[in-house]
Amino acid sequence: MPQEAEPPVPLVRSLPSGIPCHVVFCNRSDRVVRPVWINFRGEPQTYNPIQPKTGQRMTTFVGHPWMFRDAESDDPMRVNEKELYLPRAQNTMSQMSLVNITLPVFTLRERCLQVVRKYVSAEDFPQLEIAKTLQEDLADKPSLQRDLQCIAQRVEQRLLQERQQEQT
Image (cartoon, rainbow, N blue to C red; front, side, top):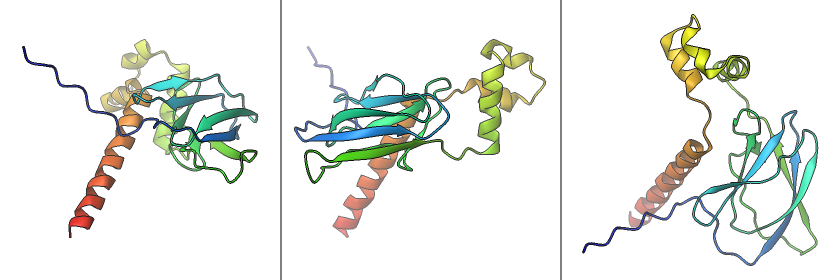
């Protein structure tokens, strides 16, 4: 009887580490932020929301990636000006790292879609007197899984490029 192939291990995932990192997730935005830890299987695990202009102390580990989302809209937030936060080793055990969570710079189109999604229910999108492509864009809500896949694709491309450079 043929054995089923195991699914590939995701590139974006937590790696085993015994090196703790003490951080303060600082929500510098006016939005409620949802921290998301990417576990050892590459699955997102949500944590308690962080209120606007506040912080949350956390002990995490080197090699454990984190993402942050708008708790209401699921829009991605920036963390230290990036999409993903990956803790690094600290100089001392008592050192605390500040991790700044901010709003990204949205295009006018993205911001308009956010506002319409906030005030119009999804079942009413087809009734809006706008172009069909805009109705489709409205229905295509932000997705943590899709963002993780895009990050993984970029990591894979970078690894392939590095491998090709080593071979030349």
